[in-house]
Amino acid sequence: MSYGHHTCDVSRPQINTVVDQLRKYPKLLHKYLHALFVKDPHVGSAYHELQVELYAEYEPSKLLPFLRQSNHYPLKMVRIAAGRKGRAPRHTLTQCSITRML
Image 1: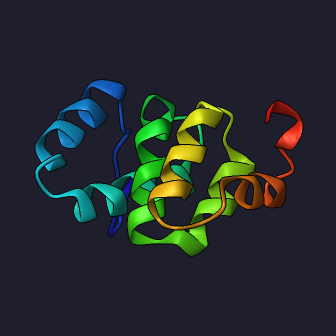
Image 2: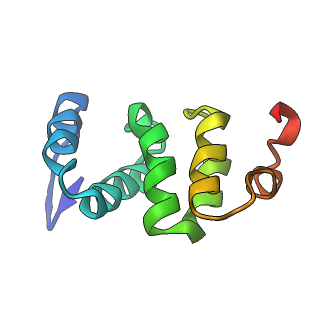
């Protein structure tokens, strides 16, 4: 991550620590994980399943782009998150072109 003119490397242990600390603040956790995903879609892949829920809750408009770029979540999770938010899971998955697994 870049802070002003300084650059620091984000390691997985640091990510784990931040995620653990932000679990009590899911909206902030979402913003943090989204920023990681934008920077490098693979660095926070251990949390992509959680991100499906967070996108569905806090930024549904970004859920489909996330699903298109990540392969690190079970399709069942998409069905659950889409169902909770009143969206048709098949419609969500169809928009992601991943209905082959339905």
